[in-house]
Image (cartoon, rainbow over all chains, first blue to last red; front, side):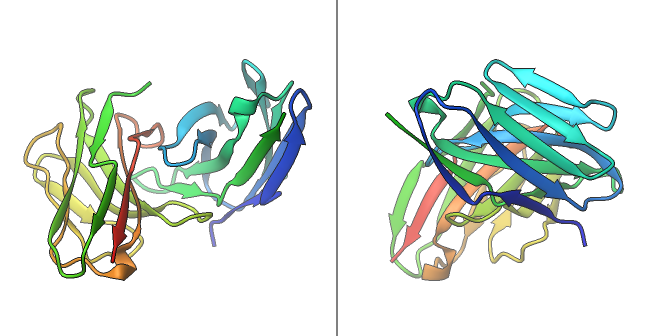
Length: 114
Length: 111
């Protein structure tokens, strides 16, 4: 069964600290993996996207890694800011259908305290 | 920032009422999607469309219906709202299937 599991479910850190969010998936055949940031009451906004051949992708203070062999990805946030408080969702796409099916994780709820 | 819009952003309505959630995009995307999301849970695909006059049901069974008469417009309708329909509804569009752009969402509460 194709699934996307994220951990931790929630995380609280102090402003300025770094953190790492985890994503494990069983989606096959794999096409790409994307991390989204979703502010409360808003739609998800894409942070990074990685294909099978990419190991690392950065977007400002966000760095995503992908290990396609172990089917794991991580999102590292550097020097956190209050505005980083949001839900971070891991989304994996397969190559098995014309729809390009997306599989969503439940997200990690990050809270940054001053 | 993607050009995809949803209205209303918040809606509180009584049981039995008919509602339509609007979604519009100005990017000329052929593919559009509706997702349902409960707090702390993953997004579930309820409807999608490949283009004008094309609509399909998604993975999560939904009593809602959709239409696609124009490329830019993909409204979702509930003929008779119930408390179980209380949720956040997210609309998305894409040119490529995996690169979806999301609207801000409509938070629906049925009392």
